[in-house]
Image (cartoon, rainbow, N blue to C red; front, side):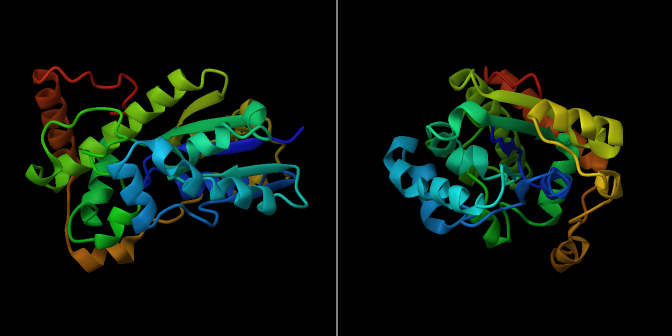
Length: 261
């Protein structure tokens, strides 16, 4: 029986490392962001401006691509953070996939992700980020932001996005209770024992050389960060996250309980 594994994550949270682990699963077509990556101006505009049903046919091309990528393999695994934003529904609705899908909810400490996003000028000077990240006022959002997108600074835009991803994960679990979800923190995957436990949970068999990629850093983007010359301390990121959450609670916004703080 084939296994189809996807991931709910925000980006900058260890998805490339998760993909590297997937490459050490037997008989598995493993990808970080398989084409079509589902990140372009048209798709993002559709899911930001309209409900999911209006772009369903457009986004269904991902299903056909997955089926082609699986030729010669029994299993498929993709760590793409666009799953929860742009193709989760077309995948889990497909008759060929839906009974055999597992989803890894991958979390990294929110302040660390905030630090990374801001240093890369996501939601700021880095225009490319808008092809990958949903805005907090997207029609498809799962939670209300503390303010309109245009009125927030880069920190608030980032934090609202990260909280929305967590809220989307909660919504996914409620809307698709038959889909198996496995929740894991990225730092927990620095041990072979925990990686093996993850593989068992999602139904993948490890190759003998799996330990060779465990706890090996990937995709740090240090050179890209130097381009923007912006430094953010962990303490500053923590303070901004705490401030955003306090503001949200004061407005009666229910913050998802599973945030990794």
